[in-house]
Structures are given as C-alpha cells and as structure tokens.
Length: 252
Image 1 (cartoon, helix red, strand yellow):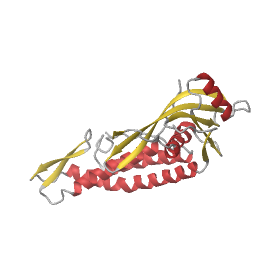
Image 2 (cartoon, helix red, strand yellow):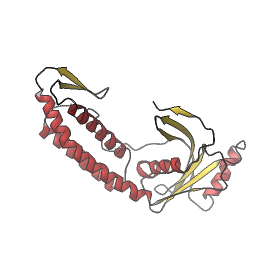
Image 3 (tube, rainbow, N blue to C red):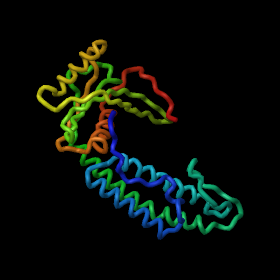
Image 4 (cartoon, rainbow, N blue to C red):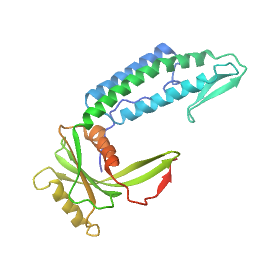
C-alpha cells in the first residue's frame, strides 16, 4: 500500500464564512495560507495545492459574478449556501452589512489567488519541460489501457502503474480521464530498464502479450506524488490515442 504525503497547505472550502466575517481578519487568513502555498511551490511541489487554488478562485469569482447580477436593488444578498455554492437572496430588504463585508473579502482575495495561481502555473511549465514521456517498445493500436513506468529518483525505483482511459463529453467538449492503479516497483538498475520491466509485466500476464507501455523520466529529481506523477498523468492523457469507436459517457 502506498503512503501519500498530506503536509500540503489547506484552506477550508467555507473559509470565507468560518469564524469572524471581517476583512482584516480574513486578510491575515488569506495571506498566511498563500505564504504557505508559496513555500510549497518553492520546494517544487504543485499538487494538490494548485488544483485547490484554482477551485477557490472559481468559487470566489462565481460569488462575485452572481452578486453583481443583483446590484439593481430588486433583490439583496443575505447569505451563502456553501453546499450548493449559491447566493441566498431576499427581496426588498436592506442590504446586509455582513454581506458587504463578504464582498469586500471576495474583492481582496481574488487578485491574491490569481497571482498565486499564476506562480503555480509557471512552476508547472518549468517542471513539465524536465519530463520526457515515451512509448516503450512497439505500441499496439489499442492504447486505452496499459502501463506507465515512472522513474522515481527520490527513492531510486521504477514505479509501475496500470492505466485505463475513459472519454467524457459535455455540450461542445470531449475530454479524457486517466485512471491509474499502482502495480509494483523495481529498483533502478541496468537489469530493470523500461524494456526489461515491460517483459516482466508480459510474463506476469501472458494473456496480454503486447500491452501499451509508456515510460517517464525527469532530467532532475521532482517530488513524486506532488509533481512528477500528476504531470505524467496529464501528459499521458495528451499522447494516448483512443481506439476508433470508443464510447463516451456524459460528464456529471
């Protein structure tokens, strides 16, 4: 069983209404969190923090956009339903001072989150340039499932994951989801180069004589779970060619 690291900076999904709804207090919360995020990025770690940042930013922007729709005075914002991420409105009621403070907090937070996201994306691009993902041996036409071998330089081992692809679609858009599962590890040595590992995998599953196998290496060591593995998964989604006629499912 793999042990995943969990020392990344955290911010509650309901941070904006937790505790005191006060701009000065929330500014300390925001800046403290983003300082921890910056330190996380400086150590070349990206996930899950970058994804969390983007989600927080989207939530804040969504609240701001919906509040602006009701500036005409026909309805006023009286609260937030965080489970559904919806603003609660009351008609012909005086504007809430608490809601004014919430909107001030949103206005303060959005540019700070945007700046931090931009830093994360720059770090992502820098890390991505260090990584090479290539096919191992002859590739079959069917690439929707197979193996990916990652050189984990931190632990001097090659980690093998099985993968399979699911196609999803929503109006005007289709995208691929990569599902992975840990299989085994091999020490990094001349004996266990990627082609040899592929042969080992074939011996273990003789019913699968020519699986699609990809190998990933990095020019410099990168944190495995927080950076290397997530980026390889995204690269894998880009290079895999779905089989003709592969069905898609709706995006929920």
